[in-house]
Length: 215
Image (cartoon, rainbow, N blue to C red; front, side, top):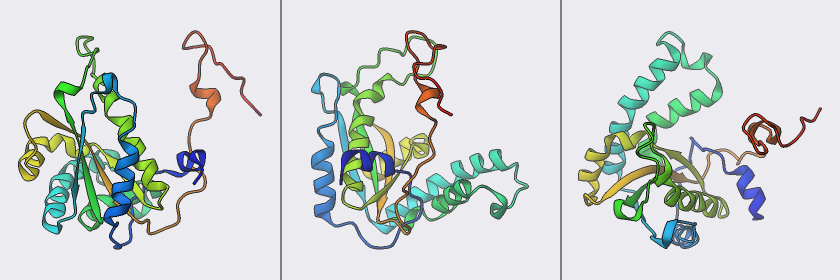
């Protein structure tokens, strides 16, 4: 698959077939993913592939209360799922069927391999993720290249202590994301909805668009 096609069609998949993803497909994806850019070539990312039905169910059990609280917040608890936008319906379905996904990959990162430079700015620290998430996106693209879909969620990171105990994750590692992996129930998207370049790129200062809006 051509790279730009993979980039433009790797959306979030929330409905999967029950077909298992072969070991060799995963190995190929991990092999490509490890070349993602990272600070100092520290290579902090580690992966845990969860296929066991009981463990997946346990992850879903941790996920659902947080999803339900979020879902309640966006619906006010008064709107039926059928009346919601399709993306929200699919996200609700995903939350309630997470244990049925063929595999859940837990993205871990070594604390001593991260170098956050923004933790004293009095706002949310995000810089440490620069050595994690490019590698994770490489994995999603490498899976897409093989016809495998993904959904990245960080909601479960709130339950890191429970996930750490469940999967025997050492104290010196954090959980950075969880990735649902499987063959899509529906065809891959051919057109994802994203903001146009004219709205997201500035030149020299934040309030100066680099490209003129097209009609």
